[in-house]
Length: 196
Picture 1: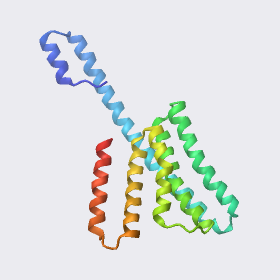
Picture 2: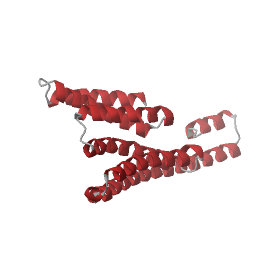
Picture 3: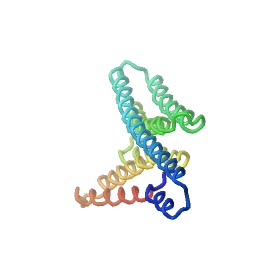
C-alpha cells in the first residue's frame, strides 16, 4: 500500500513515528511507486502484444482461408478461442504468474470469439443479420466479464453492446441518423466507464 508522504511527515512532526521509521516508510513508498509504474508499462505491452498477435493470427488464417476445409476452419476457430481463454485463465488466475498477460489473452480470446461467429456464419451461409451476430458475441463474452472481473473485458463488452445497439437501430429504424446513434453510444460508454 502506498502512503502519502505528507501524512508520514505529519506523523513525524506529531511524534507518532521516529525519524528512522519515517525514512523507511518514504523509501518503501518510492519503491512501491516504481513497481506500480512498471506494472502499468507491462499492462500496456501485454494488451498491445495481444492485439498484434491476434491480427497476425487472423492474417495468416485469412491468407489461406480458401484452401482450408470447412471442418478444419471450424476446429481452428473454436480451438484457438478456447485455447486463448484457457491459457489466459491458467497463467493469469490459477497460477497467478502473469496476471496482466492472462487478462490480455482472455481479451484476445473474447475478440476472436466475435470473429469466429462472423466467420462460421460466412462458412455455412447462415441467414442472420449483423445485429443478431453481434448479440451472440455479446452473450458469449458476458460470462467472461462475470468470471474474470477484468476491466479490459468489461470495456470490450461495452463496445460490443454499443455495436449491437447501433446495429439494431440501423436495421429497424430509418428515422435515426448518425448524431442520434453517436449520442446513445457516447452515453452508454460513459456509463460503462463509470461502473468500473
